[in-house]
Image 1 (spheres, rainbow, N blue to C red):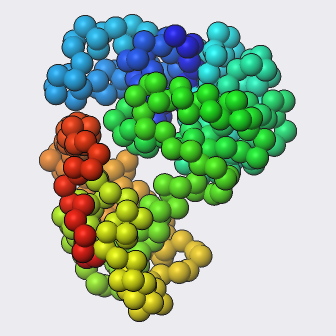
Image 2: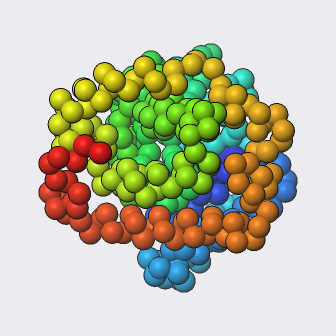
Image 3: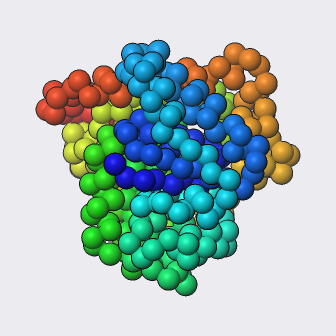
Length: 324
């Protein structure tokens, strides 16, 4: 067992705590916001519900996971017995550097610090730390208790020992870690995801389709393939010569601006931030829409179980000529 501390009880923290508590590790969680601290156990209990509903865990296992969680009242007590600290605070460089420095001043040089940043360079976060070699990036995907992938990012000063330990530790926790060998903004996943996101905003700006149809072409089109094959595998199967010709014609027509989409900027300026404010591209105030979060988690878990049952080489959809 490893004593783990999770810093932050917002969007990601409770899910991170659930992952490791469910695997038998004692987990402390801290947030400076008292209301968030008070809500943590209920959030973890809610995160366990789809696992219980699909009988992936027993009620006894769920209760045992909750019993391993301790909500800490201050940063010092949260760090006191930690062997691994996972930072999951807001995506702000100055704030993260401040907290990471405080943490490394509270723990010994043997403690591993993981940052759950989505895009900030680990090397920049490590500047000025007492033990920069002990910092490694671990980018979990939301909801972290369900999505298997974790990007393990090696900063310029991250030691090989720490990098490989964290990779193996996450593998043992049931995750699907991937090694990110160079410390670039956005790492792997968000560079790919935001390339798609940028073009999604662009087609709205062009008036090509309404938001519902933009989402439908992904969900019921090429997005289905993404669950069983990545873009490079799909390219091989479709034929690299075909992809070459498509890119030669299409790339000049895709958005390549290095600035935030005006469509996104207008939404944010109007306070339409999505689910958290009740309106974004969709109206989330409808109770039926709000229920999508629960349905999302159930469907994702069912999909992951299906993927686990498919042995390598027998994945559906891996047929030559798949160049759509």
